Image (cartoon, rainbow, N blue to C red):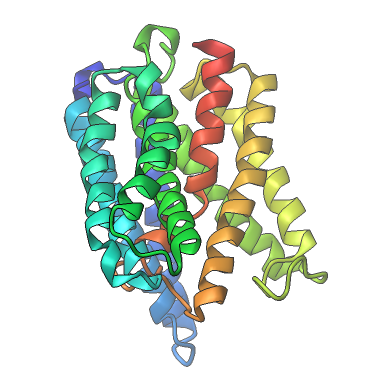
Length: 313
């Protein structure tokens, strides 16, 4: 999966992402010049972080399948590490948590060798059963249920959900000559992030009625509906160029990603509310932590994967 093997549609999509970032950087620069009294530090940090994130992801995708799968495995590691840095854990469970970290390379190895049958059950079945078994060997019963649930949810969210992005890269390329495996990843990631931005803009512009103010006071029905509608349109437009989906199927994919992305964002917001924290970390300037950035993907990745897998593969 080298650069010369990537379809031209995917190369053009990558170029368009760079153009969009260049426009964003230019707009930020002009706003700072025209309105020097307003602090645009966070906006500048967000855009600069996007440049870095896009450069890292594109580099991994262009180098090849092995590098890309390894990159997403490392992303799962960072997300799991960040998750355990914000949630309370029992001291006796450190050996249990070690097994969760060890599950990452094994699970992504299943992705790399394209062993779908075991990939799809390794974490939700085998790891699910192994975690409480390993915990009971420690002999500590206080907080057992809460801890087991925390570790299960951590593994499903940071490892299993995210690994579906990597599995898109090993799907048969001949099924999607328009965009190739990389095109599938670009379609999913771009629409997921585009949905976040669209819902934010529509909410800021027309937002009046809050959806769940106790979890995310800035989320409004106008932002949600406007963002999903915009994502549906983008999904239909991009589908024939980056995926094996038709325009009509792209409408459904856009609807799925728009709705699921919203739920994923709210879910991590609920976690932060429960823990009384603003961000899950500070690794990405202007964005917060890894979980703050991949919150929507934890829902859109598995749902989009199984949607397209069922229809085309």
